[in-house]
Amino acid sequence: PATPRAATPPPAPAPTVDPSNPFQMLRPNALGLPLSSGHTAVLLDAVDRSSAWFDDAKAALVPGLSRSANNQTASLVLIRDGQVVAYNRNPFTPAANQISPLNRFLNPITAQGSRGLGNGLDAAVATGADHIVFITSRSTNWAGYLTTLERKLRPDGRRITLHIVQVGDASDDLRAFTTGANGGRYVQLDPAQLASWRSAAGQ
Image (cartoon, rainbow, N blue to C red; front, side, top):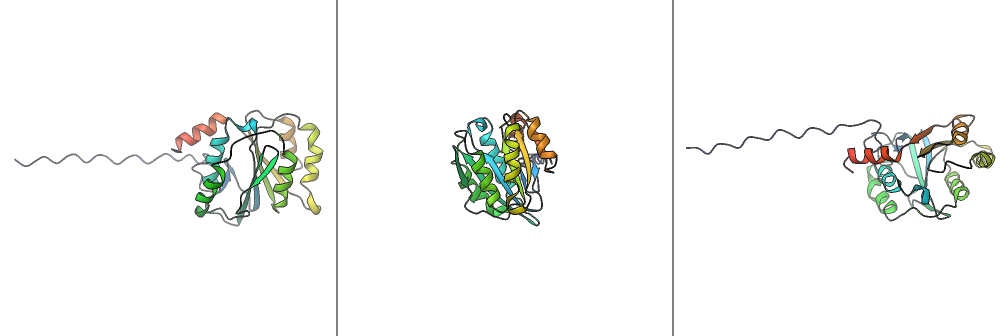
């Protein structure tokens, strides 16, 4: 008798795409915050307070900054232990050819220290960006820094718009500044949500 043919296994279900998941979004983004038109500097706070979510953030930035862009360029700057660390391809156009270079740049970096906020902001401004997305867990002592922050965002008479991705506790002072006269976006993100997005995307 003929050998019975093995049943063909059903095709694997297509993965569910969450449009809010930065690992799966089709548009260039910084931890789920879509990049604006023009030039955006992404400033990542690689300090001790970021340790709990830092690896997930690095993993999310690679796909986020390698989606094909339309009239968008980006720069990537990190604050670490009082120093500024800049991506050697700044400024760049988000595209798939950035995946390997971004991984090589981000993977060795660990979160360390606490200083460097002013220098990091200055470095992000110096890229010539129209927008800065600051990814941080700094949630205290903002009230006394807002005047300095406002001055830093107005170099040479031009205005840079600041956007915040606040990972963990919110800052009412920073939120009010960011969404007020500054005209930016403020997103509060739970570290557990970032980890969940990464798991859902199989990263």
